[in-house]
Length: 173
Image (cartoon, rainbow, N blue to C red):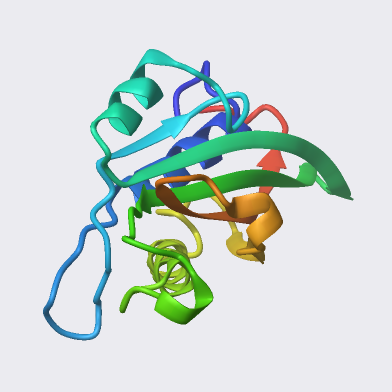
């Protein structure tokens, strides 16, 4: 972290780095299902930034990180314990020949959503300190509900990540 970065900025950047490293592999116990082609930070899910538009147009797997609130939760002798919430959307192309209940494809939207959740969980829980940037990182919400995650041509899940760190006043280096 540099003198100009906040703890919050460093924590979000460390989360992005962890999520951007998701890569499909077939070896050992560390099986990721999808390779993330881009992990972008934006103000909201429906942001039409050039980077997101390019990735979506290329029909590649994508993780969108949406920073949210930061809160001081406890005062300590030389600083404060802070908690921040970050929303994460993981998407991968999904274009089945049919989604009718009586003619489901062998790989359903729900199966792909579960695999996306597993990939994000593996990335987050591989190092809950995000390289020593935070004291703890945990996924506190996983949303696969059809009414909020259905996007034609995509399998999508929304997650909420909770980051916690101790900020020592005067120690921004």
